[in-house]
Image 1 (cartoon, helix red, strand yellow):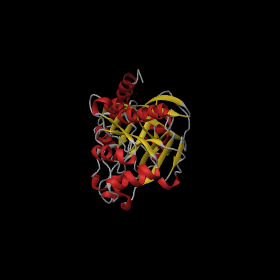
Image 2 (cartoon, helix red, strand yellow):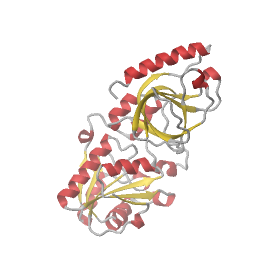
Image 3 (cartoon, rainbow, N blue to C red):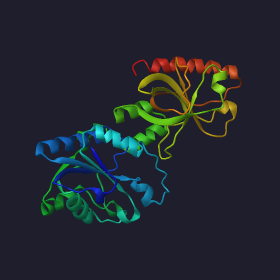
Image 4 (tube, rainbow, N blue to C red):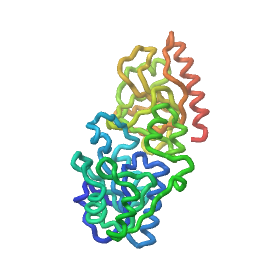
Length: 310
C-alpha cells in the first residue's frame, strides 16, 4: 500500500475505485466498506483508494472545543488499512480552508479531477462538504455528469446493529470493553513506553509496569481494573491493568499500571501493546495495604478466568 500525506502528492495513472471518510477504529462497518472497494477494484481491474483526514474534522471545525479522543493513532490506522488490501491511502490534512469546500466542488475537484474516481463506494449515512451539506443524493445526482458509478453500503449490509466510531468511544468511556470487541472485531488496544513508577506494586508482591502514552489524542478507557493481554516483543502475556489515581495512596496524577502474570524481567524503556478484554471493577480506596493486597489476589483470579479464551 502506498501512503500519501496530501491529495497533491497523489499522481493518478488511471481511474480508481474510491471511498472516503475518517475510518477511526477501522471497525467492522469500515471493514465491510474496505472489502467492498477491494473486491470492486479487482473486478474492474483498477486500483483502490481510501481518502481520509487528519486531524479529525470535528476538532478543526469546532476550534478544538470538541476534545475528540481517537480510537487509532494515525500510525495504527495506516497499519489496519494496509491489512485490508487497499492500494493507495491518501491522508489529507484537514484545515479550516478545506472545511469550506462545497459538496459540488468536493466531487468535481477532488474525487473526479484529483483522484480520478471511476467507482465510488460509500456508507449509507455519509455526509461531506461544507457544513456536511453533501449526501448520497448529491453523489447520485452528479454521477452521470462526471461519469462514475456509485455503490451505497446500506445499514443492514454493515451489521444488524449500526456500528459507529462514536458508539465505540462511548463504550470505552463506560468500560464496556466486551462490547467494543464486538464492534471492532478485536480487542481495543493502546501502546506505551514502560517508565519507572513509585514501586508500590512490588511491595505488595504485584510489581507493575507503568505505561506512558505518547499520543495525547489516543482514547484511554474508563478508570478501573481490567483483564488484559500484553504483547511484548511478539510474545503474549496475560495480565491485569489499573487505570486511575490509586485512591488508597491518595495519588494526584493519573497512572496506567499493568501487572504481567508469571513475568519477572526488566522492561524499562520498552514499548508494549495492551489489549483490553474484560472490565473487572471500579477503582476503590482501601483502608489498609493488606486489604488492597487481598483484593489484588482476587483481581488476578478474576482476570485469569476472564482471559481463559483470550
